[in-house]
Image 1: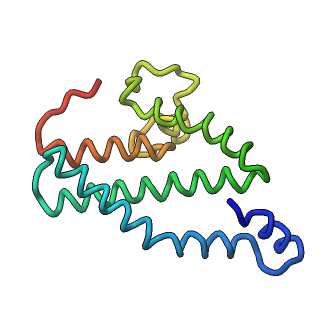
Image 2: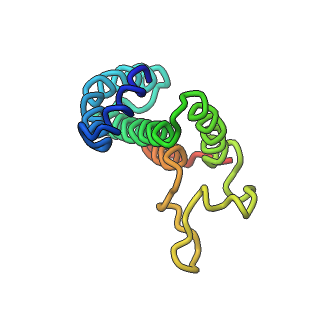
Length: 158
């Protein structure tokens, strides 16, 4: 956030393209974020006493890491749309709680308002909604994590 005015000035002068900077920034963050999420996943997975299986753990890690990358991309995209940090922060704070709220756990999918149903899933053509086409990465992550951690048991979904 501190280098944002410098980057905007250099972009205006045509030193480099903004997309190149964003791609380089994302690639430079990958090793640090991978290590951070791996440590977090080790702690959460084993403290919650999920099944001690390497396959299930790495599926858990892959799901969490892809959800982290998706949400990181979301916040970076919001940051690119606004020149001020405070404006971007306010917009992200207005959107993110709704993504979490409409992830299907706090408000069950069948109890959601019909006019906000597009957050849960896209409608393919005019057919019925398909649960595998989630718009929000929070819903996608939570549903996949439930599948991985269910251990073959039937888990009541609210």
